[in-house]
Amino acid sequence: MPMRQTALLNLILLLLLFILPAWAQAGFSSNSCHCFRNRSYDPEDRFAADDYLVATTFNSLIAKSFHISKKKIVLLKMQGGVDPDDLLIALYLARKSGRDPDLLLDVRNNGGSWRQIMHASGLAGRQSDPVLRALARGDSGRQVAALITDSMIMDAFGIDKNVIEQLRVTGFNGRQITVICALAGHANRTPGAIAAMYRQQKMSWAEIAARFNLTPKEVGKIIA
View 1 (spheres, one colour):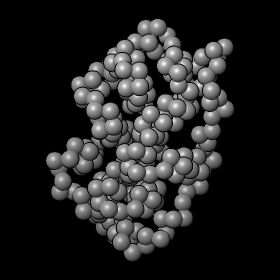
View 2 (cartoon, helix red, strand yellow):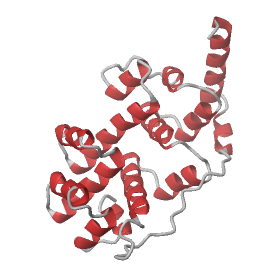
View 3 (cartoon, rainbow, N blue to C red):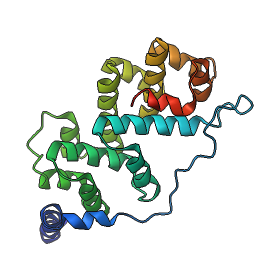
View 4 (cartoon, rainbow, N blue to C red):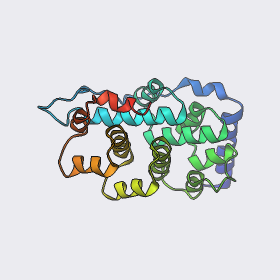
């Protein structure tokens, strides 16, 4: 990017961050929808409620980790069309900098990179933080969001990072690992045992939850 364009973008970022905080309340417009028709376990359609179970459980983890209501998370995703990775990064940077996450998301939505936003928020010098270090070197949003997710899981469940890494190696993503850890804690099982029920025994998440007397909605409440 030419130097003049870079300077102009930095000026816009500073204006957004420090002079126009109210503008961020305008929100986003999008037609994306995260509605779920199947929210209860159905033995005749064992996997029907899995998408809902995974989404609501992960939203519970976000809510607990960043002290934000699940309602706001859902509204940002449904009505705001906020990318899930961007949401995690914005919440993380907001916690570190004291800025409003809505403001950071608005800057992002208007062309700011997360590296630029991090610099404008005064966080560039904190290279001991693995998330900020990843942003500084230009890692993708997905990679940075994965780091944040792993941190949330470790804090919420007291799970060792090696356990999370092993689950990722075997093909589970951060949202699924959240479900695994929530069910493992409730059932007094190891994360590996829950993972085996899904992978080896071919059980659905909702089916595993029902085995331990939980509805899909109640899995998320374990975290709250």
